[in-house]
Image 1: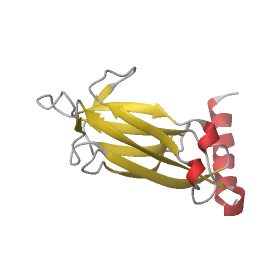
Image 2 (image 1 turned 45 degrees about the horizontal axis):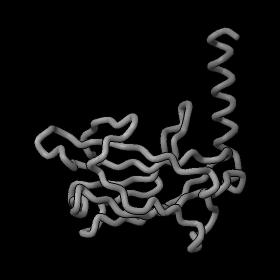
Image 3 (image 1 turned 60 degrees about the vertical axis):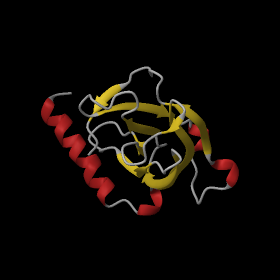
Image 4 (image 1 turned 30 degrees about the horizontal axis):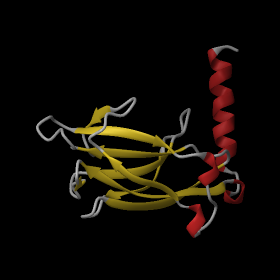
Length: 149
């Protein structure tokens, strides 16, 4: 397939999606909760941010489903939705400064949310994924550094 054919095919797909009824796009979401500690103390409420995101591939940008800072106890509960043709790929991002206060920006970690927790309506009690209590002093695989936006 040459470049011109690829561009034309991509345009046709995107143009047809613009006229697709919204009912074809399935409402999908997740609900997560948990608590973060920094050592023996709750993670700082004004500098520990959590966000659930649907990771998209291709030209479609990632969708933020919900985000907030943890509360004074380090606790959080997030739930949100998007509409997609295919299954969403939800993750929980966490930005924090635990054991890192003097370094610019925040430590960023990612938790993959299992597909079995994808829901299509308001979450029932048994549909929340509970990450439990996590101590952010730990080092996490694929941890990155990013400034909170």
